Image (cartoon, rainbow, N blue to C red; front, side):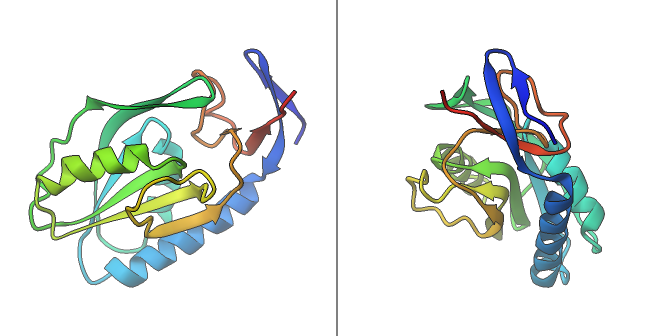
Length: 179
């Protein structure tokens, strides 16, 4: 892994694809342990979660259903503080076990907005699973139920995460090099 440049920013190697694969497998096992007796509805939060969710579900050995919602909260390398619902919820979630699949949880603003949206649909249970969690940045009181990996409060790209549209396709994760 070598350093990369996306737009005007430089990034150094941070987490390898093999490390991610191990984290994803462990998380799938934890989810199956808790939901293997049901048919949960896994709802990916787009765009960032698409690679993580695909790999997670390939590791999940039980029956499940899949859907997506799309929200936006980032501009460049900073959270805008405002969450915009881009594509809304279309599947019936009432009385279902729902697990929201996030690529990363940092400030928690997206999680609050999603909880507000989903609670109105009366799921039997609503949990959050994320690949990456930044506890230093988290400002909310909604629990993050399943965390594959805690990371420092720094901007990262790769494995679904982007910087202004670039970097989602990278198999490894890179952290920004602060100037």
